[in-house]
Length: 459
Image (cartoon, rainbow, N blue to C red; front, side, top):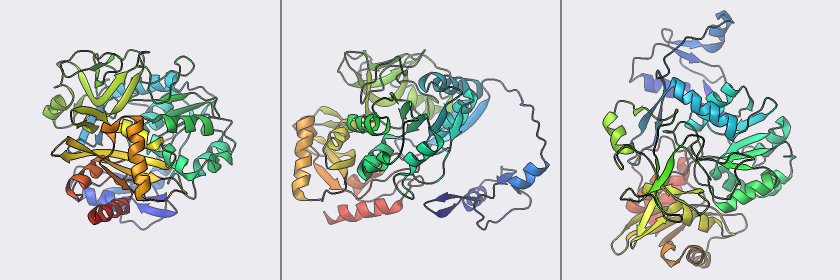
């Protein structure tokens, strides 16, 4: 019927009713009485969970399916804003999620594992449902927001339940940094033995804070790179075997043939930016975009014949570590220089005043693209022209003058999905047009965008 978030009920049944008014193919809707909010029940279609369970047999014989039988379709945002229906199949997907859980998270019978993702997103599918359950690990699941009633919620739960493996997003980590060290310091986090990061490249400053304040300087961090399309982690350290290094996902997982190519298809040299590709198939790979095979071929297989293009820019260092520098559509071309948005964001976050940053490009007649940055400040710092100039110069010092933001906007918050990802597509639309007209169905807090629109309109 609904879910709890920040002490309020988020109605779910009305959303389903609205969707099914357009699509008549769904025969049954099972409704869990979670919050007790008023719902409308269709007698021919809707049934209550507790009533069905009361009459169900406690025995179940699982039905066998072909390994390539469709398992689920999960929609993810495309670069155009039109969602793509990613199709995964039964055998390969389970193989990928099981094996990565076993080796990357080193899951053991005695572990208490917690992935903080929304169960409805790919991280929740792969690393709350399928992979952990296939490994038989004991898990923590939670409902609501990480900062309600306060920013100590996660650390209180780790202490209370004795969590040993913790998997969360860089966005959340940066929010915790902004909230202050006193929140984790108030709790006993000694049960932790392994930390994970997922969703986007984790900047070294956030990695180091996570390692020191949450892991106590003793826990390895598995910085994992993968996508909705890959189904499971493809690049990550193996704890105890791979030396961890702040900011890099290190090396490909077993059997993954990853490479970085230039526009001509040549493998890049160490330190050279290029396109991340996978050269051989892997079990949990996307099988198609549901209902759109042509888009599937054009999106993933058209850049280099026979190779999967991930859509991410990357480079390798002299030790062979993979550094993800952001989406290819987030790699800016400024006066002929390729600049990864993640690099500029990391430079901004390395300044002591900055809690979080998001960088996008906008058209520029002279340079091709200009750099537009959105910055949220840590407590105790005030917005000012002087700080704005200081931050621009700081980026110039860290990366080079070419990377200095042309526009730097202070923001009380950044637009994020319910799973915590920054919606850079909306920020790009905002700096290019001054308005938002794209798909905002996954936006967590509409007031953030409204506040940014007002600020930009004043300039």
